[in-house]
Structures are given as C-alpha cells and as structure tokens.
Length: 311
Image 1 (cartoon, rainbow, N blue to C red):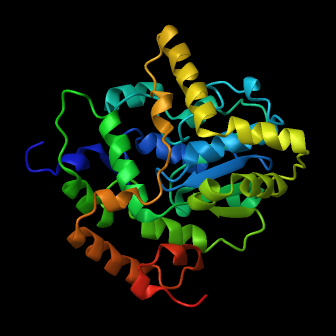
Image 2 (cartoon, rainbow, N blue to C red):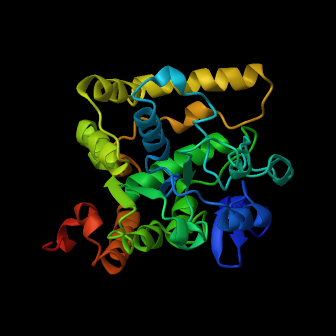
C-alpha cells in the first residue's frame, strides 16, 4: 500500500483511539460493548498470542469434567469481537459478522474469549460480574509469536515486511490492540476484583497441574484425581494439536471458509525472542519496560536484570 506501512493495512482504528484487527469493524465492536452478559459467563482475555486458546481449552475441559470428546469446533472459537474468516478481507468480515453473534443462544455457562482492552469489554460486566480470567506472557515472546501468526494469516502471494517494521508498529502502540504494556496495566488495575483471576503463561508451561487446580477452584469446580488427569491430558500440546486439526478438517469438509484452527496451537517456546531481537531492539524494549512496568508486580519476572526491584 503506497505511503502506508505494510502491517497497518491490517489495523482498524475504533473510536479513532483503539487499534484493532481488520477482522472486526465498527459495528462489531459496538455490539461487543453493548452485548448482553450473563452472570455465569466466563471471559478469557489476553493480549494476542499469550495462551488464549490453551486457557480456553483448559476451561472447557474443566466444565466437561475432562471429557475431551464432548468438545467441538463450536467451543474452540476465535475471539468474540472477530469474524471467523481466514484473512483480513473486509467484505468477508462484514458478511460473517463477529463470533459473539453466534454465541447469543449458546447454553450457559458460555466461555467468551477476547483480546480487547478492559475499557472496551461489555458495559454490563460491571453489573453482572461474570468470571474473568486474564493470561499474560513475556512481552518479547508475545511479539515473536504474534509475528509468526500474522504471517500465517496473510495471503501466500503477499510478501510481508520484515520483523523490524512489525516491531516498530507494535511497540509504538499503532498495531492491533495497542501496546502490551497498556493492555496488561489496564487489567492489573482490576487484580483485586473478586470476579478476576490472573495467571502468567509461563506458570502454565511450568506447572500446568497447579494452574488447572487454581482455575477450577476459581470457577467453583472440584476435580477428583481422575478428572484432573483427563483435563491435563486434554490440555497437552499433542492432544490440542490433534483436536484442532480434526476441527479444521471438519470445517473444510463442510465448505466453511474459516480460520485454520490448528494455527492457534504452537508449543509456546519460552525465550524464543532471543533468536530474533537485535541488540538495538532489545535495548529499546527494555527502556520502555522500565518506564511502563515499574509498579506492576505481575511482570517483575520479565524485567531486565538491571531493573529488577524488590517486591
């Protein structure tokens, strides 16, 4: 696109202030803010590429007592403000509409995933007080994973701009969903809400057993040993990859032009940013981190060595 940075063609500016993907539009975002919320809804919110679908699978497995065969592509949905289409074509997005429309009649409890800032979540959230689970991840790993995902979403005949341009657009807050810093801090302000549960992605990698138990407790579910084991098995990388691939093949057989579900499942390597970030990018990011996150207890483990502070 002449005169426009490559990745910005995939950004829609909502209310002239909030950058969101072009897989949504003004009407869909307004529907999100005005949607009817149920008291037993379960919202899962993340900055993109922070473990959204992994947590979504965990929650669903807990709700069905670990019986993975009960889950289908209807449960493994993209985030509710987006259209379930492969790519960023505005006509396809408008025709399909946001996923949240398809979930209006979904039986309770509904599991609703989103990437929006807290201020853009449904207005009824404050009144109905549904459960809200927030997953956050090392921001440098997020950028690498986000870039990899975006390349899979872009049409194969289109040559993308290099990572350097994506890095600049993202850390400056111009790209989809704004900066990781602002996103995390906005949810951090709600850490003491009684309907709120937050967990780092790295804990899910290191001790999934404990995370599953903690999530189940937050949801008011008690898991016996057998059920817990089924949930852990169903939430493994290998099991999720097979399940999502099966969902995709079913969609293809039914002629649906939807997102390839299996591209959401990656091993989520911790520390992968070290293979891509240049020294200059790393320095620039660390300066931003020190400035933005100095008062955030959640992210102390991500702080550059020279800026680690006492809790």
